[in-house]
Length: 113
Ligand code: AMP
Ligand code: ZN
Image 1 (cartoon, rainbow, N blue to C red):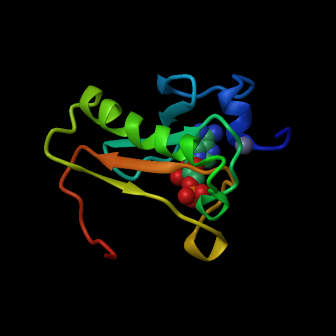
Image 2: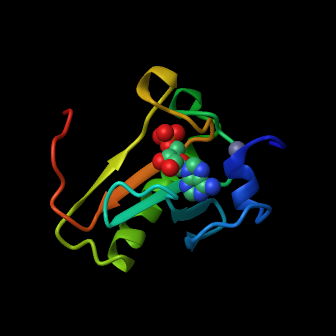
């Protein structure tokens, strides 16, 4: 997608602090970290949100979840971490390219669920 921030980051058109990449997944540090470790795990395919996952593109979402344990291990998150997805404007999604926040590196506070 031409006018998508994360597509531009994946393409290298906008710089990022990359921590992981494979054929389906790109992961980089959040520019505004909410914890000592705050990484965005995104599918390389443009999928707007979790609400747009279908049978035909679910492999991209699955690939994010197989990458997450590898990234967590590389980051030394042995005590646990949180994975968050904001889906849609009312949930606080600001970048309309599916992404999973991988957050850890400290004892995490209040949780919603
Ligand atoms: P969300 O609010 O769930 O859509 O998350 C979007 C995230 O993208 C926020 O946590 C932002 O801090 C992060 N973000 C926005 N622009 C950049 C960027 N250029 N590089 C890294 N992270 C970014
Ligand atoms: Zn995109």
